[in-house]
Length: 132
Image (cartoon, rainbow, N blue to C red; front, side, top):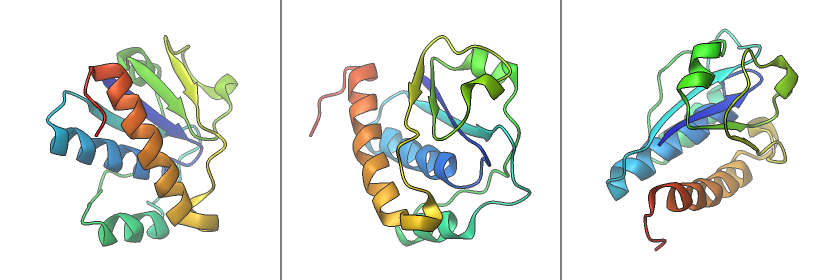
């Protein structure tokens, strides 16, 4: 499964979701490839997001970048985290909207808690992995 996480700035929500998905896939031994981008990317990664990941032993270094049509076309699943889908350069084949999650600057711990649960459910639903 190839999942693409999108948030407006490509610097916090989608970064956290990508790092959590990559970690879960590695720990559980499932074939999930996660990437992220933004519709209006920031110049740098959000330090709040990076610090929250670091405290969990996770690193992330890919710089924010603008989503391209090829990114969407390559993804089996696109998850938006606050993006206006009208701003996307292509129409995703499968789209999930998680725009209801809090901003990292508002409550990064709640954001991570919600994302961990949703990502686990997403991976279980799309890989046949058993929930534990």
